[in-house]
Image (cartoon, rainbow, N blue to C red; front, side, top):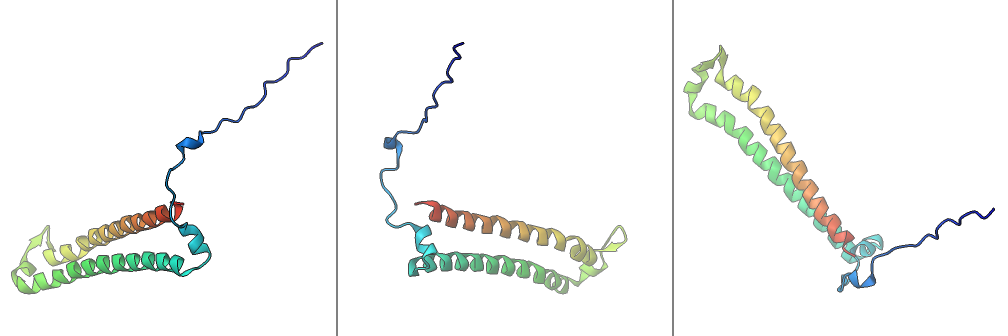
Amino acid sequence: MDQPQPPHRVRVTAPRSAARATGASFPVAREMAEQSEVGELFVASLIRSQLRLAVVVAGGFLVILISIPVLLAVFPDINGVRIATVPVPWLLLGLGIYPLVIGSAVLYVRSATRNERRFQDLVDDD
């Protein structure tokens, strides 16, 4: 009996004309792998941007955190105000700080991820 032959496999690829016309002047990933001065410069730039972000977020957090006692010192009448038998300063410290911590953390993580993504795009841009 004559069995039918399976069809031959054909590899389909994109045409070379679709390739990027201009390439990067130097591959960043290779510079980093070789630990050259250029690669070290890129890594140092990422570290500086992450440090700057951390200082800005921590500074903003501290300014808001310090403003609560200053607000209570400037307006001492707030100490006598109660909401559902709980003093307002306790509510500010108990309920106001946690959203501030969570908001600062979310802001930091989103911004740090964006910095790392930009760096990764630069490295992958070979």
